Image (tube, rainbow, N blue to C red; front, side):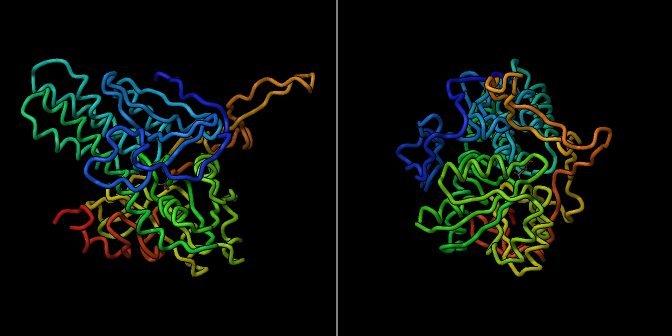
Length: 417
Ligand code: MRU
């Protein structure tokens, strides 16, 4: 993985901004095809604001460019995955994470792998593409976006007769998937903003923000759109142990956008709900079953849905169409990723090492700190499944639906006939 680039920036933004970037200012490559761009997000690093997609592609270098999300919120840096195995490793190791972002990364990774093929034998080329597909698919099993994205790229490739044609179609379709992800999130914002009132208190879990997509985000899209409409509201971010995507990524995004927010411990949500401090919950999803309305999302989502039901608080899930799985018939069939126990047994953060002379400190460094009892082991399922009866509605780019309405609306939701 090649690190660096001049984007490598310092700590927290000096001047967080609250403005959406207008389409004219967008630096995102090929952002707007024929559809109208509503807004994209700005990142302010060292006082300089610009738009950064979570994932882009360097076609000359045949490299996938990614925001190194493990360093946020302490450092903003872009890294290059230079071959499809590095791209798969970046997904697996969570340099890039979040359903739509790993979907776009897998789409680019497939194009990257296809473009790296040298030779004239079409059968060998297709074998090679299959290896690329399976390698990227295996990187993270719960989210369905990578599979949907790569299937979209492969379907486009079949329109080409020669290897060269298929290689070029692969990249064009990967770009299209990324652009569509942005458009879908913008539409989610348009529909979802209506759910947020002035002085609403919103709870969210994990990070389903722009970092989890190509831009804008799913659960955050209604927040950003409501802010653009001039509404004032407050967001509680679940810290989201064990990897703390809420405390690190969602909080950073909201700070960038100047949205009022506080991080809460995961187990504080029930107390807040009981005391009337939460008006609605909005979360994302890594896989939503079109047939049943079940929602796989970051571990802890199900607990929040049970609590919301107990307190009669609306519980919404925001998803682009690429997050819908039209095949599986039961949430029990969703593969639940089990991650390394070290994530539970400790935490990553920034440490300032103190020397014996208390006035001298070495510069801050990212470090892992063991928290749990030495010798104890841990079990670390990454996701859980929330049943449809706990979900008020699902916010999609095609409108807001009850979970049980997805199947009968499948034609409008990209599910075919
Ligand atoms: O393990 P992660 O960080 O890739 O998990 C994905 C998530 O961020 C959440 O589950 C999110 O709510 C849905 S993805 C938009």
